[in-house]
Image 1 (tube, helix red, strand yellow):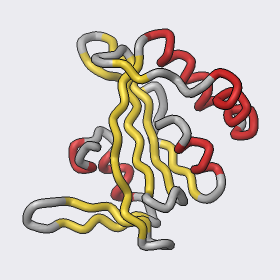
Image 2 (cartoon, rainbow, N blue to C red):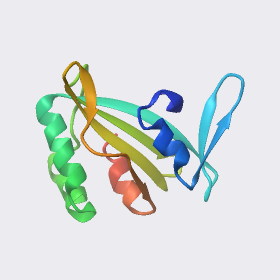
Image 3 (tube, rainbow, N blue to C red):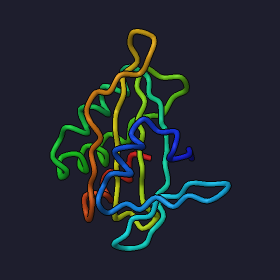
Length: 129
């Protein structure tokens, strides 16, 4: 797990209407306010081929994404990959925020803007971790 304050998408997450950021002396916590569930951050890295598959998955409708993950499995996480996924997931799997980055020009560049999901679709995205 990573610290939410170190994410590239931290500003977008804290601006989301259903997220409350609680800061204390030693930590920063995000809470999904409708369920009061804590949101945890993950940073996952992928090889070029697995990253491209992940990008295709994230562009699919949710029903097709679920079928693809069941049939082919989730994309395999690597070390120091060309793709990086920042994923924020509530403990109760009712909220998810994510952003995908691709390495180029000696830095990670966003593939798309931060995306936020609530409700039943989060269960499908949670299968990626």
